[in-house]
Length: 263
Image (cartoon, rainbow, N blue to C red):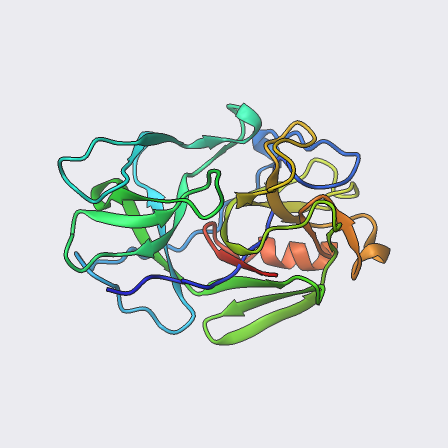
Protein backbone atom coordinates (compact mmCIF):
# COMPACT_ATOMS: atom_id res chain seq x y z
CA UNK A 1 0.00 0.00 0.00
CA UNK A 2 1.39 3.40 -0.98
CA UNK A 3 0.43 6.73 0.61
CA UNK A 4 -0.28 9.11 -2.26
CA UNK A 5 1.69 12.37 -2.33
CA UNK A 6 2.85 12.31 1.27
CA UNK A 7 4.80 15.50 0.63
CA UNK A 8 3.47 17.33 -2.41
CA UNK A 9 2.27 20.92 -3.17
CA UNK A 10 -0.08 23.82 -2.09
CA UNK A 11 -1.83 27.17 -2.89
CA UNK A 12 -4.95 28.70 -4.56
CA UNK A 13 -7.97 30.91 -3.69
CA UNK A 14 -11.70 31.49 -3.96
CA UNK A 15 -14.46 33.49 -2.38
CA UNK A 16 -11.47 34.77 -1.66
CA UNK A 17 -11.50 34.22 2.02
CA UNK A 18 -7.89 34.86 3.07
CA UNK A 19 -6.77 37.26 0.37
CA UNK A 20 -6.07 40.95 0.35
CA UNK A 21 -7.64 43.53 -1.90
CA UNK A 22 -10.70 45.73 -1.83
CA UNK A 23 -12.74 43.71 -4.32
CA UNK A 24 -15.30 41.24 -3.05
CA UNK A 25 -15.65 38.42 -5.53
CA UNK A 26 -19.26 37.66 -6.32
CA UNK A 27 -19.89 34.89 -8.80
CA UNK A 28 -22.69 33.92 -11.11
CA UNK A 29 -22.97 31.07 -13.54
CA UNK A 30 -21.60 33.33 -16.29
CA UNK A 31 -18.40 34.04 -14.34
CA UNK A 32 -17.51 30.39 -13.85
CA UNK A 33 -15.17 29.09 -16.57
CA UNK A 34 -15.58 25.61 -17.99
CA UNK A 35 -14.05 23.08 -15.60
CA UNK A 36 -10.99 21.33 -16.96
CA UNK A 37 -11.26 17.66 -16.05
CA UNK A 38 -9.60 14.52 -17.31
CA UNK A 39 -11.93 12.20 -19.16
CA UNK A 40 -10.48 8.75 -18.57
CA UNK A 41 -11.41 7.04 -15.33
CA UNK A 42 -9.29 4.31 -13.82
CA UNK A 43 -10.53 0.78 -14.33
CA UNK A 44 -8.43 -0.95 -11.71
CA UNK A 45 -10.87 -2.30 -9.10
CA UNK A 46 -8.57 -2.27 -6.08
CA UNK A 47 -5.13 -1.19 -4.88
CA UNK A 48 -2.81 1.45 -6.31
CA UNK A 49 -3.41 2.41 -9.95
CA UNK A 50 -0.23 2.31 -12.00
CA UNK A 51 0.54 6.01 -12.26
CA UNK A 52 3.56 7.57 -13.92
CA UNK A 53 6.04 9.56 -11.81
CA UNK A 54 4.64 12.88 -10.61
CA UNK A 55 0.99 11.96 -11.26
CA UNK A 56 -1.79 12.00 -8.66
CA UNK A 57 -5.31 10.63 -8.49
CA UNK A 58 -8.51 12.68 -8.37
CA UNK A 59 -11.79 11.45 -6.90
CA UNK A 60 -14.88 13.25 -8.22
CA UNK A 61 -18.31 12.71 -6.70
CA UNK A 62 -20.23 10.53 -9.14
CA UNK A 63 -23.77 11.71 -8.38
CA UNK A 64 -25.53 14.83 -7.10
CA UNK A 65 -26.56 14.95 -3.46
CA UNK A 66 -24.80 14.45 -0.14
CA UNK A 67 -21.61 12.37 -0.24
CA UNK A 68 -20.94 10.32 2.88
CA UNK A 69 -17.48 10.51 4.47
CA UNK A 70 -16.25 7.88 6.95
CA UNK A 71 -13.43 7.89 9.49
CA UNK A 72 -12.68 4.22 8.90
CA UNK A 73 -12.96 1.98 5.79
CA UNK A 74 -15.44 -0.39 7.37
CA UNK A 75 -18.72 -1.45 5.75
CA UNK A 76 -20.30 -1.31 9.22
CA UNK A 77 -19.17 2.27 9.93
CA UNK A 78 -21.58 5.17 10.01
CA UNK A 79 -20.70 8.40 8.13
CA UNK A 80 -19.02 11.05 10.28
CA UNK A 81 -20.01 13.85 7.90
CA UNK A 82 -21.54 14.51 4.50
CA UNK A 83 -20.41 16.94 1.82
CA UNK A 84 -22.72 18.37 -0.86
CA UNK A 85 -22.26 17.73 -4.57
CA UNK A 86 -22.21 20.13 -6.28
CA UNK A 87 -20.65 22.64 -3.89
CA UNK A 88 -21.99 26.20 -3.87
CA UNK A 89 -19.45 29.03 -3.91
CA UNK A 90 -20.53 31.68 -1.38
CA UNK A 91 -23.76 29.63 -0.99
CA UNK A 92 -24.85 30.86 -4.43
CA UNK A 93 -27.04 28.30 -6.27
CA UNK A 94 -25.90 29.82 -9.56
CA UNK A 95 -22.25 29.15 -8.71
CA UNK A 96 -21.96 25.38 -8.55
CA UNK A 97 -18.71 23.42 -8.71
CA UNK A 98 -18.20 19.65 -8.62
CA UNK A 99 -17.10 18.05 -5.37
CA UNK A 100 -13.54 16.82 -5.89
CA UNK A 101 -10.86 15.29 -3.70
CA UNK A 102 -7.16 14.55 -3.90
CA UNK A 103 -6.68 10.85 -3.24
CA UNK A 104 -4.29 9.98 -0.42
CA UNK A 105 -4.47 6.20 -0.54
CA UNK A 106 -6.16 3.36 -2.40
CA UNK A 107 -5.95 0.44 0.06
CA UNK A 108 -4.78 -2.88 -1.34
CA UNK A 109 -6.87 -4.80 1.18
CA UNK A 110 -10.12 -2.86 0.83
CA UNK A 111 -11.73 -2.49 -2.58
CA UNK A 112 -14.74 -0.60 -1.22
CA UNK A 113 -13.12 2.63 0.01
CA UNK A 114 -10.65 5.35 -1.00
CA UNK A 115 -8.85 7.65 1.45
CA UNK A 116 -9.00 11.30 0.40
CA UNK A 117 -7.94 14.74 1.62
CA UNK A 118 -10.92 16.83 2.71
CA UNK A 119 -11.53 20.56 1.99
CA UNK A 120 -12.31 21.32 5.64
CA UNK A 121 -10.64 22.56 8.80
CA UNK A 122 -8.26 21.55 10.28
CA UNK A 123 -5.85 21.58 7.36
CA UNK A 124 -4.73 18.14 6.30
CA UNK A 125 -7.96 16.40 7.34
CA UNK A 126 -8.64 13.09 5.63
CA UNK A 127 -11.51 10.65 5.41
CA UNK A 128 -12.75 7.64 3.49
CA UNK A 129 -15.32 7.64 0.70
CA UNK A 130 -16.88 4.68 -1.03
CA UNK A 131 -15.37 3.85 -4.40
CA UNK A 132 -18.87 3.44 -5.78
CA UNK A 133 -19.59 7.09 -4.91
CA UNK A 134 -16.65 8.61 -6.83
CA UNK A 135 -14.93 8.44 -10.17
CA UNK A 136 -11.12 8.10 -10.10
CA UNK A 137 -9.12 10.04 -12.67
CA UNK A 138 -5.31 10.36 -13.01
CA UNK A 139 -3.86 13.90 -13.11
CA UNK A 140 -0.34 14.71 -14.37
CA UNK A 141 -0.21 18.26 -12.92
CA UNK A 142 0.96 19.54 -9.55
CA UNK A 143 1.89 22.91 -8.09
CA UNK A 144 4.80 23.69 -5.82
CA UNK A 145 4.94 26.98 -3.92
CA UNK A 146 8.30 27.79 -2.36
CA UNK A 147 7.45 30.23 0.39
CA UNK A 148 10.31 32.57 1.21
CA UNK A 149 11.64 32.24 -2.33
CA UNK A 150 8.60 33.92 -3.97
CA UNK A 151 8.43 31.10 -6.51
CA UNK A 152 5.62 28.99 -7.91
CA UNK A 153 6.42 25.97 -10.03
CA UNK A 154 4.01 23.88 -12.06
CA UNK A 155 4.98 20.34 -12.96
CA UNK A 156 3.49 18.01 -15.54
CA UNK A 157 4.71 14.57 -14.65
CA UNK A 158 8.46 14.95 -14.24
CA UNK A 159 8.65 18.10 -16.40
CA UNK A 160 8.54 21.64 -14.97
CA UNK A 161 6.33 23.72 -17.27
CA UNK A 162 6.22 26.96 -15.25
CA UNK A 163 8.60 28.65 -12.80
CA UNK A 164 7.38 32.12 -11.95
CA UNK A 165 7.58 34.87 -9.33
CA UNK A 166 4.70 35.37 -6.89
CA UNK A 167 3.63 37.60 -4.03
CA UNK A 168 3.26 35.90 -0.65
CA UNK A 169 1.48 36.45 2.65
CA UNK A 170 2.54 39.04 5.17
CA UNK A 171 4.33 37.76 8.27
CA UNK A 172 1.30 38.41 10.53
CA UNK A 173 -1.02 36.28 8.36
CA UNK A 174 1.31 33.58 7.01
CA UNK A 175 0.30 30.91 4.54
CA UNK A 176 0.49 27.59 6.38
CA UNK A 177 2.78 25.04 4.79
CA UNK A 178 1.40 21.68 3.79
CA UNK A 179 -0.33 19.73 1.07
CA UNK A 180 -3.53 21.13 -0.44
CA UNK A 181 -5.43 20.83 -3.69
CA UNK A 182 -7.49 23.07 -5.95
CA UNK A 183 -11.20 22.94 -5.17
CA UNK A 184 -12.66 25.48 -7.59
CA UNK A 185 -11.75 27.89 -10.37
CA UNK A 186 -13.47 31.27 -10.61
CA UNK A 187 -13.46 33.60 -13.57
CA UNK A 188 -13.75 36.89 -11.75
CA UNK A 189 -16.35 39.48 -12.78
CA UNK A 190 -13.63 42.16 -12.87
CA UNK A 191 -10.42 40.92 -14.56
CA UNK A 192 -8.80 44.28 -13.84
CA UNK A 193 -9.54 44.02 -10.12
CA UNK A 194 -7.51 42.89 -7.14
CA UNK A 195 -7.88 39.18 -7.97
CA UNK A 196 -7.10 39.43 -11.67
CA UNK A 197 -9.02 37.38 -14.24
CA UNK A 198 -9.00 34.02 -12.40
CA UNK A 199 -8.80 32.66 -8.88
CA UNK A 200 -8.28 29.09 -7.71
CA UNK A 201 -9.68 28.05 -4.36
CA UNK A 202 -7.69 25.64 -2.23
CA UNK A 203 -8.66 22.95 0.24
CA UNK A 204 -6.70 24.75 3.01
CA UNK A 205 -7.48 27.65 5.32
CA UNK A 206 -5.64 30.40 7.15
CA UNK A 207 -4.58 29.40 10.66
CA UNK A 208 -4.82 33.06 11.75
CA UNK A 209 -8.03 34.27 10.09
CA UNK A 210 -11.17 32.24 10.77
CA UNK A 211 -13.03 34.47 8.33
CA UNK A 212 -12.03 37.23 5.93
CA UNK A 213 -13.84 39.49 3.45
CA UNK A 214 -17.07 37.54 3.86
CA UNK A 215 -15.41 34.17 3.27
CA UNK A 216 -14.17 31.35 5.53
CA UNK A 217 -10.46 32.26 5.44
CA UNK A 218 -9.87 29.91 2.52
CA UNK A 219 -6.47 29.92 0.85
CA UNK A 220 -6.16 30.61 -2.85
CA UNK A 221 -4.05 31.49 -5.85
CA UNK A 222 -5.12 34.36 -8.05
CA UNK A 223 -4.01 37.15 -10.35
CA UNK A 224 -3.37 40.74 -9.34
CA UNK A 225 -3.79 44.32 -10.50
CA UNK A 226 -0.60 45.27 -8.63
CA UNK A 227 2.18 43.32 -10.40
CA UNK A 228 4.74 45.69 -8.86
CA UNK A 229 4.28 43.79 -5.57
CA UNK A 230 5.25 40.39 -7.00
CA UNK A 231 8.29 39.18 -5.09
CA UNK A 232 7.04 40.74 -1.84
CA UNK A 233 5.04 39.75 1.26
CA UNK A 234 1.73 41.58 0.91
CA UNK A 235 -1.30 39.24 1.11
CA UNK A 236 -3.46 37.88 3.94
CA UNK A 237 -2.57 34.29 3.08
CA UNK A 238 -3.23 33.80 -0.63
CA UNK A 239 -0.69 33.55 -3.41
CA UNK A 240 -0.71 36.24 -6.08
CA UNK A 241 0.74 35.77 -9.54
CA UNK A 242 0.74 37.69 -12.80
CA UNK A 243 -2.52 37.79 -14.75
CA UNK A 244 -0.77 36.19 -17.71
CA UNK A 245 0.39 33.23 -15.62
CA UNK A 246 -2.93 32.63 -13.87
CA UNK A 247 -4.70 32.74 -17.25
CA UNK A 248 -2.31 30.08 -18.55
CA UNK A 249 -3.02 27.84 -15.56
CA UNK A 250 -6.77 28.32 -15.86
CA UNK A 251 -6.60 26.79 -19.31
CA UNK A 252 -4.78 23.60 -18.34
CA UNK A 253 -5.12 22.61 -14.67
CA UNK A 254 -7.94 20.27 -13.64
CA UNK A 255 -9.60 20.59 -10.26
CA UNK A 256 -8.01 18.58 -7.43
CA UNK A 257 -4.53 19.43 -8.69
CA UNK A 258 -2.22 19.01 -5.68
CA UNK A 259 -0.56 22.11 -4.30
CA UNK A 260 2.39 21.79 -1.93
CA UNK A 261 3.17 24.84 0.14
CA UNK A 262 6.82 24.49 1.09
CA UNK A 263 7.47 26.74 4.09
